[in-house]
Image (cartoon, rainbow, N blue to C red; front, side, top):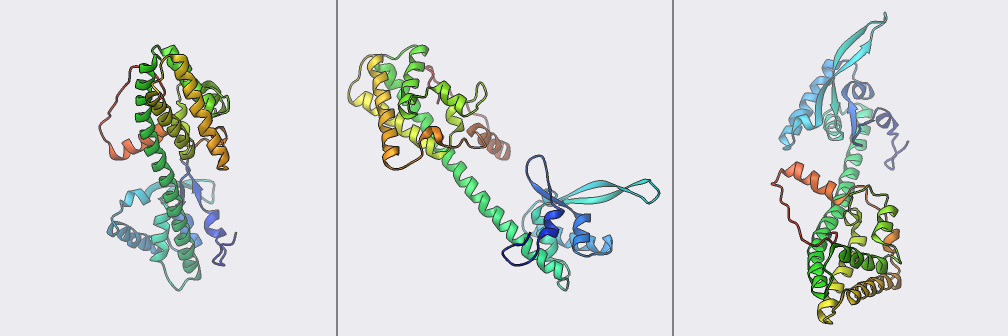
Length: 288
């Protein structure tokens, strides 16, 4: 496989591994051979310099250089346990940056890992940007759904059964006749998984507009009676759908379901930041 820079990077791709979480890693013993270091002791010196550079850049060495054991076969059928190091892409980059510049393969490695590291940075920025937009829109939608519950209750939507019908009318208007159950099934969600937690930014934004405009319409028009509230929700949903169509946008039911749910993203953030767990609940149930 040849990169746009012109050199053959298959040597580095061929020794790359992918763990169960989808992260790339390399073994130092494999990289040693690929970089044409005959002796492990000489290569280990380069690794130590790379570790120092890792520390000086403010990174945790163990996050990028993980000591592991590896069993190798001996000539007469025996086995021997040797020390190896599991390397991140960043660790490989630091190693080739501190390798022997006279080796052509070192120069190729510097280009390869620099380009791959930059590509990953760009990918992460794009992913984080999408996740951030989803988190912000989902949080705003939770607040608007609480207000929508309050407005609907004031119009006469009281019981849990009434609220389920009221919610479905909004979905049916926005999703071309699909109910909450239909959407749940279409997204392939498991029982208990919330629809709104499994929407991308565009789909969340459409539902936010639906909820906000329905609440405003119920209050502005002083709508009374659960039947009239249901019809108002249906009408607003249809209007939002019509607007999306007129703008040439993708219909909500055709939007892709993100790989991560909002709850998964929030859990990942909690694990990294370790904040206190806050919970709030609302009496009547519209999916917040």
